[in-house]
Image 1 (cartoon, rainbow, N blue to C red):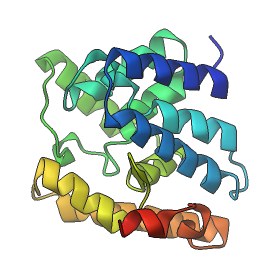
Image 2 (image 1 turned 135 degrees about the vertical axis):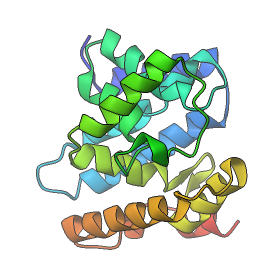
Image 3 (image 1 turned 90 degrees about the vertical axis):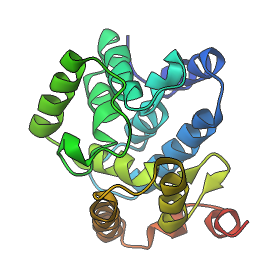
Length: 199
């Protein structure tokens, strides 16, 4: 099955009906952030970035879960032949390539845990992986926001394990890298970011 914007939108819509929740709108705003930033980066496809943003949490279709949604999304995309989207379903949660840097709960089998640990360690990240990692932290269900607001939003829900600050630092590094690529502050590319951050 070909992955394009229409297909990705339809799959997210279907997944949202299967497991309704704020994750769906979060995914839509993450995708728009991906699209807007990629459109300013040489060598990146805005449409491809948009698809990856839409699908990064697609594993949530199977109900409420923690890290299980990562491997569920991976399998969902692999079944359709979307290898890069499948990788991003896992990689978006690991800006540091070490499974020990997870902030969630591994509600998966031992076999799946071992698979994910090996996958994360050996994955070759490119700008699409890094872009979704960034945009995941720029999107609330209500719209775009400053990274720091999203950091606190996640911390309130997941707590602050020892890796938290290192994860934040990595996302800030990715932000700076994309600002060099786009030639502007990324927030300039996110309409309504100020209003949504301060409401």
